[in-house]
Image (cartoon, rainbow, N blue to C red; front, side, top):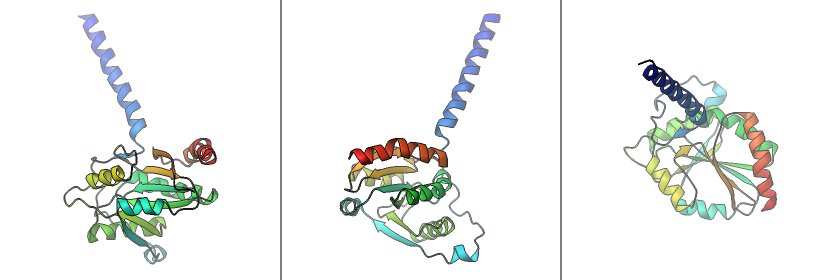
Length: 205
């Protein structure tokens, strides 16, 4: 009987340890299919934020492929959404990194393409001082996460999207893909990961 109790306690402890490890591995990105933060959430905005000008442009997979061929400097493409907390938290560090390293930064929103969601997206862009963002033109009418539209877009554009955001695509000055990965929201992580991996690959290309 004592052996059984010891075995059960050991198994339970293992489950707890695995759960904690899994949490810290996955907590910094959102899987498309998880429940999004409340779309109707409202926040207080100062006058400068409210009057910050933003632009949302619809984008198809075909248009993305054509745009990619026209770039002339290293570019970070960031797939994000107004309801994605990790996406929002990492944008300030992302903007800072792109500016410091003379890289273009392009946002593509996974929000649904309707007027209600565009208003929510605009408010987030104003708060984050994001002047421009593409919005995937294809949209799901019932899926709050818009995951099918995002998967179709990335499949048509040849991106290795596995279902989570923030999702990054790094392009060199020729528009060639040099790296694709899920994001993280710590500024030191950007510095270390980009410096050790992305810059090296950009130079190699």
